[in-house]
Length: 474
Image (cartoon, rainbow, N blue to C red; front, side):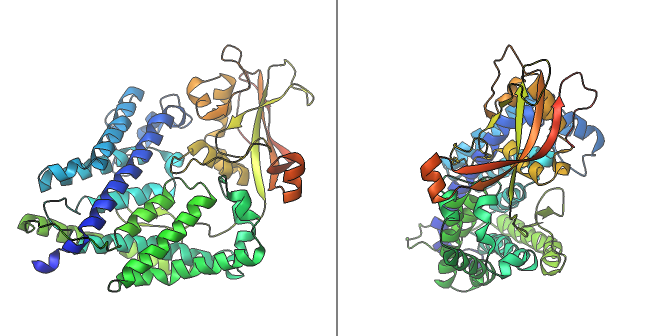
């Protein structure tokens, strides 16, 4: 069937596939390097505890069959290896069916991780990677031209990502309608980047222009993805520019980069298409059957998107095949941070020698400038931002974090930038305090060299030691 393929998009497919493989690599690398402290056998939320109470049908994962830290590590590093192979183009050097199996492999590997990741893997970009990764399985390789149906499925995902995010903003915080949200967002976002201070200090009229441009990009431009070329390419290009602007202004793991990858699939590059064989019948049947199934599953996300009670970042099936997305339906006006400290003294007085633990990405020392980590995902740092918003977010895992710090647990300390205590002498007590943070002004930056100013608010966790019967935040 001639209508089935779009050979003019061969370079779009190539760029999309190689870039998606790189995103997969960051996802698996994050899992491999952080899992022991987060969900390992002695982690804050251990996988064995989850699989003991959650049936396989609700969260399909290989770890229902077997779990050990060594097995999980092998699983995650295998994902890294497959991602590198796909980025190198191995899928184009094998038959069509083998290339599809190669693309199915990282999706299956990562699905098993996400479905046991619990709150550490509750972010929208986890489901987005799985949904995009599943559709990518049917995009084919160099032996056939790209199927037009699959290309439109990728645009459908991109449309829901952008349009859903635009709708949740209009329905949510009034500052989006008043064009004032960026007066706060760069300062209060989960993990500021090295340029966030400068973005925050842009003139307020420019902030309003940014918000208005965001509304246009998320509510009008996505519709143009389904128009003929070159309009669709122009729409995708605008989305790419917007996402790169977000990359510069913050640290959102691989969300922005994956959205850029999606937009690249809609760009028609001016390149001569190589000659390919016709698509085999079995391939056409499989692609069309999958497309029909995904369109049918899209009913719930669409109903959610047009509902006044729209929710963000929700999966409607355990395989994460079709999901709903959105971000920042509300914007915090004030930034709070939980600062964790320890002391080796026997009596935890207020004037004791309290030493602060330093995290890699989240604000701590007011003089330490934010770093760029995305697309790598610092999961603990992100959850610490949620903990500062409300202790309820931290209730399942914060007590375990404090316990590991009191033990100088090696895997947990690897998630931090610096532990103030030597390995052989863990702290006697650990406490947590809540501070209000704000970006300094130009004058304050020149005078103090500090990019943050912080003020003590209240106690988050009283001084706690291992002998205490209960270790939890309150």
